[in-house]
Length: 84
Picture (cartoon, helix red, strand yellow):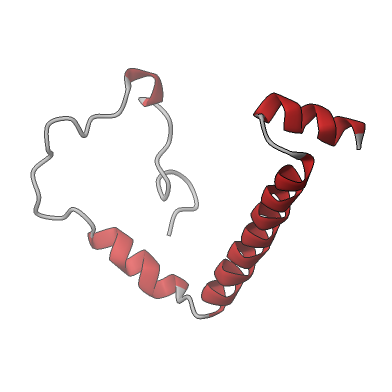
């Protein structure tokens, strides 16, 4: 309770308001987790991989799409040994 009081004071809200917001955020997180779990059951990995393989084909690079220099040299997903 003391910690909640300190946080509420730092945020400039009443403890009850802090608790309401914390509960709302937790409920939202749980609903989001359930949503993605349900969506993943309908997913088709082979379809997704086929879509990703053709993404960007026939398109010229667009200025500004370059990777930052620190990212260069890292392996791309699907490259290297064992890639399908």
